[in-house]
Image (cartoon, rainbow, N blue to C red; front, side, top):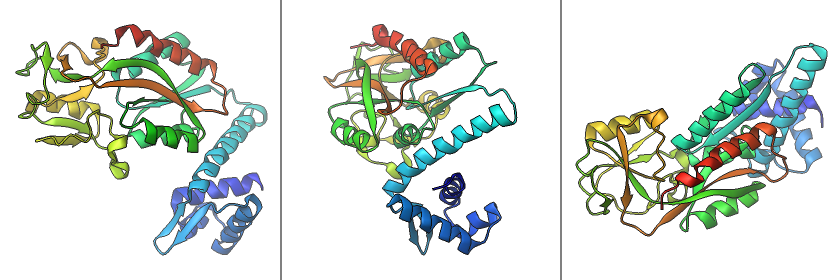
Length: 303
């Protein structure tokens, strides 16, 4: 196995075509195919699934490529620092479901470390993409929730991918609405009172399983439902259509302002928000600092 083969495999996975990858790598297609076949024989796994529609990664291939990307990235860092003599910034990346307080914790961490010596990235994504990012070393930490409904399925996936989940806080379920909503002044809201208003849910793409939903009560048959891809659209729909979403109830007015309310849902359900990380990788100082910042929200969790 060579570094060149790892780079080839990463390119093939990105192009999803042996011909396109060969063109991008400036080598012949037969040479590239032979190199990938040799790599599969040496590792003893099938990395690529070849069909008439192109090339895709097998489950084993996805795991292998995660390690391959890490090896290539580390080599590039070594080359840059010791051969090109360029000062390399330390990197930290976190992926998360759409939690304002998780972004706020990231902001506070960046303020403390500064950006002169560090390169930061934050990804608000679909649930499965959060898991993939940590599995593939794109992010050191992933923030998501578990509850009685999804925990068995997600914990099984975590084990398959070599990940572990650690709880940060447990909270009740709240209805997130804008301050002009007809129900904004309620002390408690029932699910029946919400029937005439659109429920807003984050789109989960091809992994659109109830178990990957960011909102609890994902199997409930909502009378009106709108799916969206980003937080800004959600907030606009709350104001424009009196929409609502179900959330943790932790509001960060410093980021979203004071135009929104979290009202307790009349339900005994709760959710545990925590983080995932790779079992075989030690947390970096930046990772530990981020978890320290986000843990401050334990006291703000509403029951």
